[in-house]
Length: 106
Image (tube, rainbow, N blue to C red):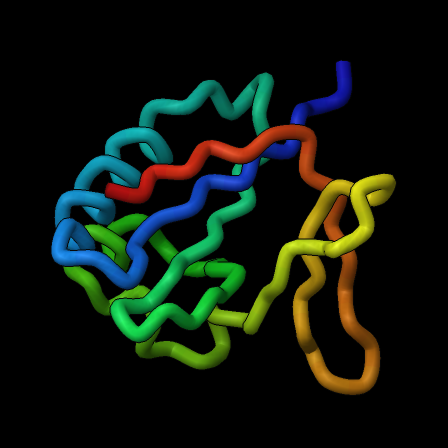
């Protein structure tokens, strides 16, 4: 069985930013990894979107955005037929199809 790709969005330009990080951490740690492949998308307090490849501990202690090697700028594909995200990697952007999104934004 192929895993479903689930985008988990956390953070955001909100006064509830820290609550979002706590909630996302709980979801990330408890989601069934045999069924779902997690695609973590963090939104900074300033509103910048990143595909996050680091550890959940860095989300919990709010240092997730500090390591540039673990964060890639990302946008949601404007093409409804594609249904995914585009990582802005420079010369060759990377597309990832997403089956569902779990917005953990408060």
